[in-house]
Image (cartoon, rainbow, N blue to C red; front, side, top):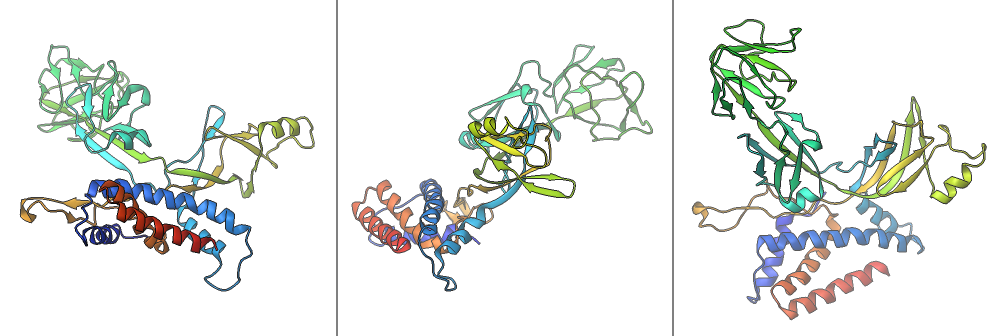
Amino acid sequence: MAINVNTVYQTVLLILNKEQRGYLTPVEFNKIGAQVQLEIFEAYFDSLNQQIRVPQTNTDYANRVANLDEKIQIFKTTGAATYANGIFNLPTNQGAVASLWSITSTGAQNYPITTITASNLENAVVTVSVNGIVRPQTDYSITSNSLIWNANTPRGTVANTVGTTVAPPVQTITTTTAVAQPNITVGSYITGNTITASTGNPANTVTITSNGVGGVGINQQFITDTAQTLTATDAITFFSTITVTAIPNNFYRLGTVLYTSGSRLQELERVDRSSFYTMNLSPLTKPSESFPVYLYENNQLTVYPTSIQNGITIDYIRKPADPSWNFDSNAANNYSYIYNANTSTNFELHPADQTEVILKTLLYAGVVIEDPTIIQVAAQQVEKENINQQR
């Protein structure tokens, strides 16, 4: 259930170009579309609050409270809260679409993240992994859209005992000397001519043998500890793939907080600090595992009693994903914009809001192309829609 982004864009272009008023580029449309969707989405909650206070009809399909709840239910979701340092962190990315960027390590300290924008990185839950192993946040920093490894962080390079620096993926070790690996990236892979690797010996080393038996095999992950050493009897090459994953933080509004203990499921009561201090004074009202409470501050939950450290799930409203009209453009189509449904993102709003999406998009488009007629007509239509919905 969604509003097709191409339908909206083509309708807006048709109206704008009917009298050659102007043209809206895909980049402009995407930015306007994100703003329009967010405005309509946030208006759901004010409208619901208003309609709850108004007598409703019991006629099917005409109950405005039920209709608004139907629009909001698209964004209702549930996630587990994670416990750390005495607090529960909210789930932030249920249903969100992840953005990925990946590169083969060159041993460099800085890498430009080319497929994820700086704003998306700033507003997302970001993880950095090397060959599938997630690295701690103390290993790196992300500034704008650049990944910067700390100076002492393993990132795919190694200085061996014969003085050769191995920088994946092109250099190799050919010495038969035991090679200390203080800087080899955890999770690196090994390749070579019939090379295998054996692990698990008491000396905490990885032994590389030619035509060996019982090892983990060519192109297999074998480095599990940066303190390990290598003994090489054939040419070997280390490969490290760095991957950045950015999942948008789409938490919007907190709903019900639940606690599961065995087969028992119960709702926690939300309190403010003043109420908590008061109820904590009496043994009769003091929070217990049978009657837990929580404080909600700074997007974090503090659950009482503090003996509860797991089993907390949260019902919440997530934000819609930004719409995106994506396209292909190349010499074969004379560099025109050809809509690509596979890489585009539709409006997540209820289909009943398609008219309002188009009108509000036209309103902002009139500002972009500096056409007061479009602004005036669109504004009048939006106002008329709002009045009809509130009567």
